[in-house]
Image (cartoon, rainbow, N blue to C red; front, side, top):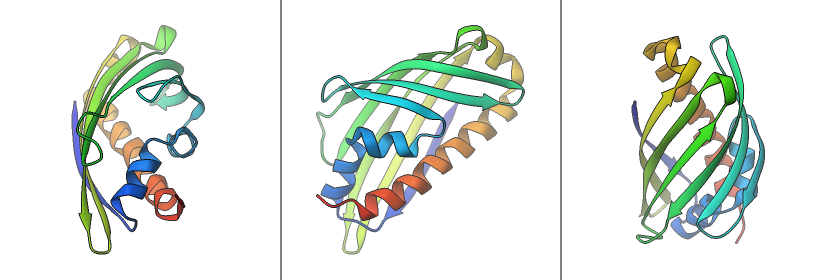
Length: 149
């Protein structure tokens, strides 16, 4: 599954980049996130409760950031285990473009799922993924636009 989108954030690029690297901001934006621990500048651990159709699961996973193109571009990869519900793994490439009145954030995300989740059907999975991504970026846009460096 692949998701692509853009969102305009009314904040300077440096502020948006800083928010993308702030575990407290990310925790507040990730739907169902119970815990987000920053082990280093490139390693995070997350615990997220999510419901996809009739399947509700608590995922524990790790995220690795590649900041080699920062602050204009970076990517992340991650994998999570939801026990009997299955697993999810994937990544995203993010590009930030400065504009006079804010920053355009563009992303392409790819994900793969297995276990009970994979049996639910692609329309339900894609619909849920789009809804979760939308919730994340709406909240992120609010918080990144008000974050003070």
